[in-house]
Every structure is written in C-alpha cells, then in structure tokens.
Picture 1 (cartoon, rainbow, N blue to C red):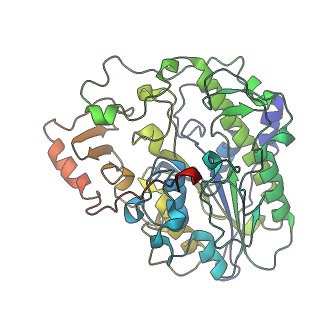
Picture 2 (cartoon, rainbow, N blue to C red):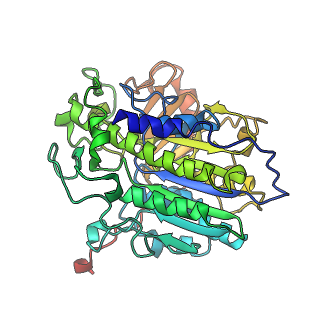
Length: 467
C-alpha cells in the first residue's frame, strides 16, 4: 500500500498558487488544523525520528510555508494545551494545567474571547470538526472532554460529541497493554473517524461562502491507541525500525523529581513495536492532511487562505524511559508548527516560539485588531522576515514545575530542583550543566521567563458519583 500513500502526495504537488494577497482587498480565510500528539518524528525537517517516517504531504507544505523548528506547547497534555491556544492565555494565567481541570467552570475565561469567538465577532463564518478542544468522545466520564460551543456557527459531528462515535473501528489488536496498543484494524479507511471529519471539512471548503471562513479541523491520530487501516501499518512492515535508546546512567546528574515524571511502559524501551505503531499513525494522519489540502487546492478559497498546522504537544517513544506526553523534556514540548501565507516565501525559523503565539498571529494576518488579553506575541514580523524574535518561552506542568526554552538552552525548574541543557552540544538533553561554571548567568537570564505568581492548579473535576 505504499503506492497509495505516495500517490496521495504526488497528486498534491505544489498545493497553493502564489498570490498578491491583499488584506485590504479581501479578508483571508483561515484553515486551522490540529494533529493530536504529533511529535517531531513526522516532518523530515525536524529530524526527530531515529528512522524514516513518511509524511509527504506535510513535507510538501513545508516546502511552501514557514516552518517553526523550535515551537513548543504551553502545557504537555491535551486539555491545558488546547485551552491555552484557543483562549490565548497561558496555564500560569489560569490554573488550567491538567486534563482534569475543568476550564469551563473557571471564571477567568468568562470575559475573554476564545479564538472562534474572535473571528465570529469580526464577520467570519466559524466551523469546526474533530478534536480542537479536549474532545467529548462518548457518554462514559473517562471519555468526556471539555468542549466549548462559544463562537462556533456549527461543529461536526455535533456540539455534544467532537469526534465521530466511534472514532475508530471497534477492533483492538493486542500487542501492548490497555490503550498503549498498536496494529492494523482490518477495516476500510471510511470507518476511521478522521476520514469522516476530513470528508466533512472538504464539503465545507466546496460550499460557497458569503463571508470569510474560519475552518478548524482536528485530526485525532496519532493519539493512542495506535490503530490504523492495514495499509498504513503494513507500510512499515519491511522498514528497519530503530527504537530510541538511552545512554547508561543518564539519570545520574539529573535531580530525581525531574528524571522520573512519567516512566510507565518502560519495559518497552528498545522494542520496535510502539515505534512502528506510532509511525503508522503519523503517516495515516499525513494522508488525511493531504486529502484536506487537496480539497482546499480544488476549492474557490485556495488563493486567499492562510493555513496553520499545529499539535497540542509532542510524545516520548522510549526517550528517557518514557512513552507519554506529560513531561517538560524536548520530546514532549516540541511540536510541529507550520504557517502558510499565500505569497510568503518558504522559511525555516529556529527562534523559540509558543503555541500561545498562534492566536495573535492569525488575527494580525487577518488584518484584525489585536486582542489585549492574549499572552502570546504575533509572529508576523518573522513571517514577513522583518525581524527575529530573540526570546525564551514558557511551558508549565503545574504552578510548581516549569520549562524555559530559548534558541539554545532548556531550563527545568521545580520547587526543589533544577536542570539546564545545552542543545548545541546535547540535543537529547542528557547532560545537566546547571552546576557547571558559567551556567549561573544563563540560569539567571532564563529565570526571568518564569512566572512570578503562577495561578494555583484548579481542583480536579469530580466524577458524577463523587458529586
């Protein structure tokens, strides 16, 4: 089935034609694409995978757009990261740090404009489908999400459930344990929830619009479990899978609270199965992305649409004995971020940027007034190659534990521990140099990015039988 995957990319050749793109002449449309749990293994320019992972459609788009190679989430799990990008507020400003923090019950959000609300109030039709917020997937409490209907004219499949139910065929190959599992479904593409979401999105692109369109599309794969149609799992059958490994004794100079944050499933470190399952899901997500982009290319909106592709966080695949998000290491915080502005030249940007920057960037690209409530910073100066934003950015696990990342260093700080890593000499972050001569000045500089009075964590929401 490699032919199917590769042909899907070749038919998508150059994507969008260049245009003069005048904000004054016509308000641009926005295609806002989220790919869940998408780490740096996919895009070849990010070079994160220990073996080749095929993402031909993303790579084709990167050859036309602005790829941010040092982009990071604001929190390393779905709910706080997605709440942050959609509200423009950092978790340290709201107390929403975890999947169980019910931001819908947080008064901090009552008076701010969520991203779709902002575009809706400025004359846009706002449509969404799939996982944009932490999505509702079923009536079981453990599958309930935290979705807000505010600002949407319509949402697929519904305002009650943001992923088609079921989101995948009801088949569970057993190669791992629980949701940590992978394999082919034995079912057709059409049974996948992501396929249904992309079909719906293509229909919206083909529908004549009397107002500019803000279209949000959430692709659920490569979220666990890593089940995909057989052709994508079989795509890696003959590929030499090189799992991530870790040097012996890597924890010796890293404080205990920082080294062992989420080391479940570590018995699978060095085994190829999880890596194959994840890679298959990444290639499947890229296939659906290609379908969506070809739908845009064939639509009347093609020459006046800004495309942004992002993920809520990365994912460990054995690095530092982790198979998870939920950490403040590079593998968990670094995300693909790509913006295509018609008429802009291709660029790769290694400045540290944050998902918080997406909200103010999109409204400035659309020629709309700035939102004073945004915690982020517009990336338009970078997109237009006028200047480079030399700065550090913040990712928070909770009010007591943060990561600061700039163009060279990662600084981890908890209440009782710290670590510093030099990416020029240690890109995999195994050598803590916090106590070395010369590091004090670096730590002092990076510490200026730490929140001085972070909002405490919200209470975890209660299950119905606990209320």
